[in-house]
Image (cartoon, rainbow, N blue to C red; front, side, top):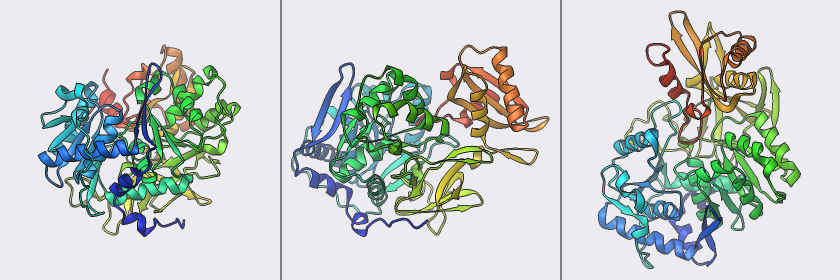
Length: 514
């Protein structure tokens, strides 16, 4: 696959230079939409720069170059300013989520222990909820009209992107200033974006997709970013669709489960025009053919072009971007194991398949994991990233088939968990799509497979249907099956089902238990 190379001028221009360039134009930069209302809160590019300079001033007073600065704030304009201000100050940002629930608190504590931040930028109402460290409320920091940007090398760390933890303990991928601008260029190149483009959505800023699409790329382009919170999307998925209709030429992104939720709610949508949507990126978790078709079918009556739906593939260790469908839109191909959705071609990096594993090389690849100078076995000495994802190339397009660590091997035969999960979802209408985890287990009978499935009103009929479907479709008896409320199936910070957490919770180290 011969991809275009990222221009040298991009790889040598500091990210903060774009901030200063944009401030010469008094136009909208970032808009946070709140509900009920809705109400829009907007900062212009000059206002963004002044607030960023204020954050940089305060960080320089209290930290040293190279110090890590955790960002534990609500998804609003303060988060944007905190992240950009940290980079402007020459410190290393650590974007994290708000500490809600036990899993959220554990994730933040793990990141703090790993990154050892010297300070934390947060929202005023969260000051008493973060781990012990010097903390500043972003709302209390006064703007500054003169603070200069730090001098940084393009190879210096810009931020630590903590992985979602779907198959391992979260680790901080070291994203350099060079990797950040490379990823922003890749988005621009693939989707023909420019300063007139609207970047719109709700994916969280602590996730690589939200961070690069809704904060990084708008700065790189001088474009307008419009966003709201993930919780507001969950409350009403059609808020996402209305946002796209309001901003012609919008580019947005979301995990596959969001496409299912939006399609299910489409019957309540009033008359809107989606004919001018640029791209709706579908990534961050496996892209399902049924989801692609349902989403396109639901919103085609509102003018959404099928070609606007862009299945894509990326990961934290590649900043975010690896491959994407382009102007052709989704490609769904029937193979022996069913229909698969292509995730397109690379832009600005190279991929190869080594023993069925996807490897990636390019300027957007992270410089290893924080605190791991040996780079482990994920990053090779000659510059390749071993993704841990399985896949193949067909007719020049990449297809992702699963995770290497998730592969289920029973009696010498390989089974991809997402295939089993799809079978379970189709077995009975009460099983919830996107709420099923299949994983390998071992007991006195050897290797086998177990399933945790989110189910509305579970009963013996559902259990029988699921067990028969898996047996018939995969020649596998289930060692264990748990039918649980849909919300009980564990998910990662990015919304993916966490098979590792499901296995730990329901199977445990010593076999099945309640």
